[in-house]
Image (cartoon, rainbow, N blue to C red; front, side, top):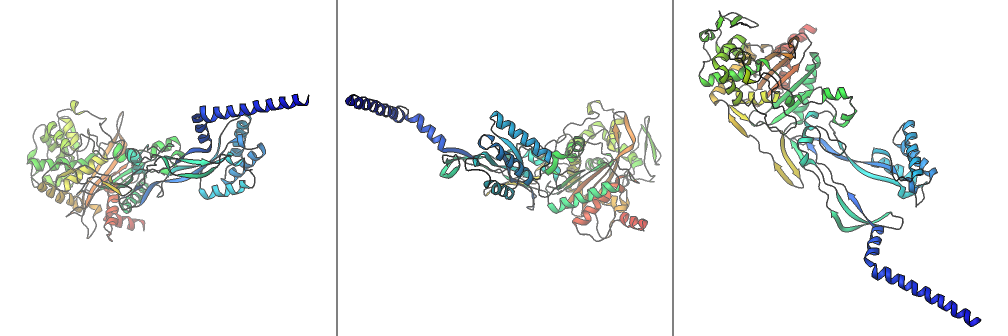
Length: 596
């Protein structure tokens, strides 16, 4: 009996060893690859290595937009006890300043996931690293080693705008997935975008990271290009300050300002008002966001009024249709009826000037912004001549600036259905033609810079890891007028400020030129008697222009509606600050006296 027991034990033990050897043979030989892969998965994992979206700078290096790393905090209820989950939720919500209602909502979500076996619940986003460390330190005294992996902290890059509203319409915003949806963030998204990398990490049995495997970057992170714009931060700040002050002073609905280098086409500043803070773009109510969002300098089209007169005047000089000292009465022919006064009849239409100017010359017509004189020139040009002006100065096409949403087609009277008599008359003083402020600005630059129509430039260079890609400057689209015609137009436009419709903008000791404009804003039922667009385009200094500017003020509700009184002072103040001129405009001096 004893021997039988020993034999049985020996047989059982032998069978156990044989089974164990067989199992080991099955695992280590027959299924070696499968279990090796499983072991590798258990002790290693891929972890993202974040890259960063490119920064946006002004031309002089001021940081306007960049990625900053905040953290997202959450819990995985599978690994943490119910009591400790409550502690986690309370600590995180208190540390991040969440409301009691928010804390109760998160606690309900966590306990529901715990009951249903769910994996992850977000507790807080945009948490700075210092606060993350404090929360981790507090929870280290509460959670066990096994529970620690249930407390999840993940880096989350977000877009930050350190200069607030400065150049907001130029910079734009990104969405939650770091894709540009407005401004440069959108138009240059392909260059700004990042590509995250991945690396393999080794973990212990508790699935905590132990060490990075050196050299095992499965995918190398690639950051975006840094974008340097052509705008100057000082000039942009000046423009925004003066535009806001002017719009508020005139109790207007909004305003636009563009400052450009006439000798290269570089945009030095561009602003729309009202503006917005890109960092809290999503916080604005829908109606408010809709009002603030548009970059009206390129997206909106206007019947601009008298600011188009220099373009037709320059073309008439260029083509020899008239000379500077030619009397406008000498050009009168049927169907125009005009005795040289402030009223003229063209067919069935009555054209009026604000003031009467005897013996008006071509030069005087521009200086004093005569609608009658420009109507006579419009008829001389005819429909085809008007179209030639439109084509020469780029009004029939987008400018091609590197910004999204540029207006393309004019939603107004199509040239194909223009009236052969009345439409050239209307176009000659800025109606029946729709233009964007940027189109006007670059065309006005061509009038005063020697006749060169430049493609406007907003991006100066792209930089990444020592690589610099410069965007060509001074790209000439065409020669709109001759240098001699341009010289004559500079002299005429200087007289607009010295003695014409912008004489209240004159500054002793500092000469600049420009052109005023005032136009009715149209509604579906026709033109209103309340809503106007007050405009001024200017250049400085008068002799050798370094900057050109276009300012438009929508629906002023102050004491005046005229461009020389509403928009002109904004341009003049910008010029004063740019060139550090001590003297003030005549209008500013008069206003000071009146206020005292």
